[in-house]
Figure 1 (tube, rainbow over the protein chains, first blue to last red):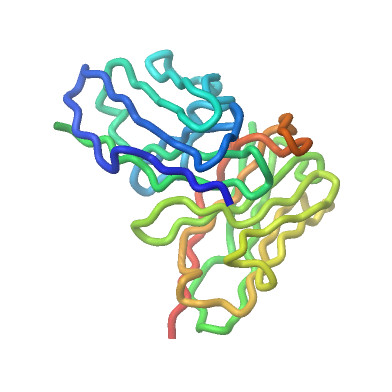
Figure 2 (figure 1 turned 45 degrees about the vertical axis):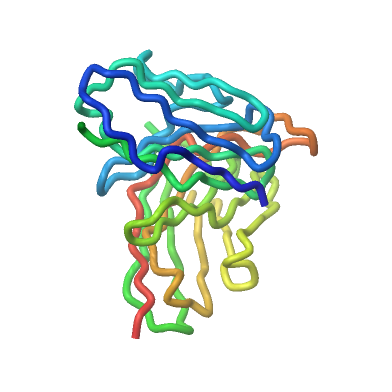
Length: 107
Length: 126
């Protein structure tokens, strides 16, 4: 099983600032990496797939990068609606796995 | 418009069974890759199972041999039959429509989950 490790567990950021979230895979997943956003009481929402492609309707302030084992999600200027938990997921094989999540909270 | 609506959750005793349903609209379940993902209270996301458009099924080790994913093409509905339930199966269960096959070093695998239902809560407790 591929283990996904996200850091930090919690990120405190002020509105308008940049947020950088990291995700590391225990073995290469190529670019088969997705990022999801989840708000309390809601289902996850796909933000990024293929490591760097924004899903439909996702604002340009969200960007993804990386390949192999190291990945980054950047939110260029945090808006109030961006405070949430973010998960990375590898889908390089059928036994897909999620990271444990990074909570982005208001500083 | 793609919609996924889960149902069937509830309170069940340890060792009991439950069947979850996921009614789909706006697309054909049998032509797509469909997954179940769960989230224990206050915890992260855990992939549970996937069914390929061709009918192949795969399971997380934590549920293999106890859970069965299936679909009813006439009802355009995805199911998750859960047997021998344990306290650690307590979670919100989401169904999701996955993306088309992507290339991997071992062949191909469905893409990420583009569409999600709202989830249904399963509580396993005596």
